[in-house]
Length: 270
Image (cartoon, rainbow, N blue to C red; front, side, top):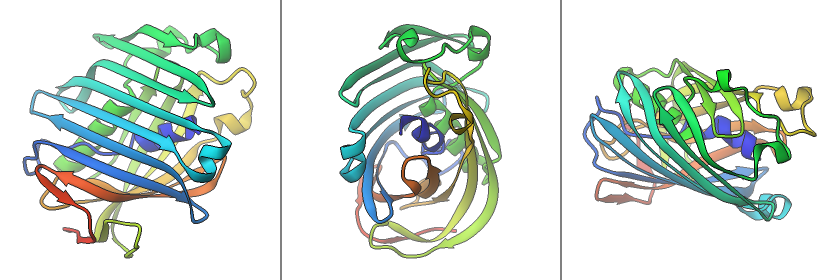
């Protein structure tokens, strides 16, 4: 489940400097598979022209929680290096399958340095070679970089290598174009939105008992970006494939844009 989320979290939101100014954004998502709720996710963020801070928490619900109970809270702070997100510090902690997990990473130039890692890497996974970690980003910085790119030029043709202290993944996204999202009682937004397709593939850090072709298979998905109440483009709906639950759809169900709370069906801006 957590490996699947790597591909999805990297496409999620952050505000963009070239878009209308927003001091803070808070977003709530709910994910469904086969009509059943399986995940809730919350994102809060703030940034200025020099840097950014992002916090994200998510937990399994319903059937997913019964099969794989877990919750996670991550945060990052960083600066902008041109168009690229340059993280300073990333922290993540959670409980998955009844077992505590924690990672603290500090970044020295382009080198991520592990400050703490629980459980130890050798207990469950193959280590990621040090040379492959150079120039990588965490999941939250990668999503900030992508959405900033969407906000500045209206496209999502970008890629990122993501290292979370355990796994190394490659995320690539491309612009499909403007589409119309159908209305849904689960969704905050319907109407015109920019569609971006993405693919995520794990490259290293495999579980010792899961090194086969299935673990290496790329996972595909789509995200639709739209403006809410004058905000920069935000991902308002996502669809992605998983090994566990088949196709999953994630809806934006509530948003706080600056001081305004948006909790009902809203029209989107082209």
